[in-house]
Length: 277
Length: 210
Image (cartoon, rainbow over all chains, first blue to last red; front, side):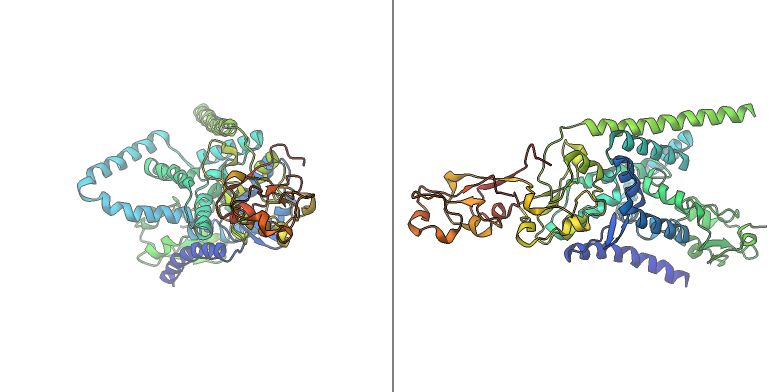
């Protein structure tokens, strides 16, 4: 079951990319940034906030879609980050392609980068709070200068526009070089781009109210091996009995990696199940 | 207690600097480059409103049936990166020919307004290099607005339709060439896209009356 879900996530990510390309081919209004369903317009929550701030109005035509997405985030958490975000997928693909090349002769350089990254992390102690401060500054700048700047650099937007350009005009765009920013962040910082991604942070803030579909550690079968914590890309410390709905992206890696099947996905965890004795 | 307060204050200082730097960076980026004028898809808001409202989601370029809409790539006018323009290299806008407006109807943010009066709208102006023209009359056949492309008539009023032009006047080596009536040209770019010798150009309207 868990392995099926992991496979489903794997296929779902690729299916969404193919769906956007096919939509562009068939002239349907479906992108990673926005989906137009006639009267209902679903847009990226960050895009909605940017649009509101830079026009200094509440864009009422986008409000129903924003509320619907907020509701979805409350039910599903920030599942978008693990299940649909194409930038995360591209980053994983780049890592998969590059890391075999980095092994062997360049092992030393690789470990030097890892050590440098760790030292940078220890000295700066970057956390989600820094990301929230950057996002606050972003919103301030957008409001002051009426310029929705992030939509130009957003890795999801860049990839979405390039997929559509590929399907409509059979070419790629130069703005692919903006992907260098998250790639460099991933190389330099232990937390990578995750803690600076404003879209993910907005989703995290909306997901604070999430109480459903949470992974829960069954204390009686847990061996305290710490594998679920070590493998979590989003830094959720599950076996300590805390569930961080801000950070968890429901990737279900903790379920898959637990050797004793001690982590279960609970549709509606009771409060006594959440804390570990 | 004192220690805790110190840490909090230091963190607050750090967060303020981070936020300030980001806001400053956006301010810096927004003043680089001059606000150029572009041939926007039909129904676009005035330039500055359009730039601040457009989500850069590329839905307009996705739904355009002629693929005429392309998004601007990296350039110095950073405010307008990834905003849509009509690029006649890919196609022309068929709003006046077929009443299309699909881009404006599916624009999520309303940067393109679908409640636009096409009979009063102009999105650009076409330029024709007459000295290189071969009198193929493709621009006449493609133009959706009668009278926007004219052919000089030595005997009186210029011709507005290709079939009215006598054959002897429109031979390849004729000294008479078609010309654009900028009063009527809407700037859809169809003639530019289909022009066989590629001697027509689509320019933005510098001072447009909104």
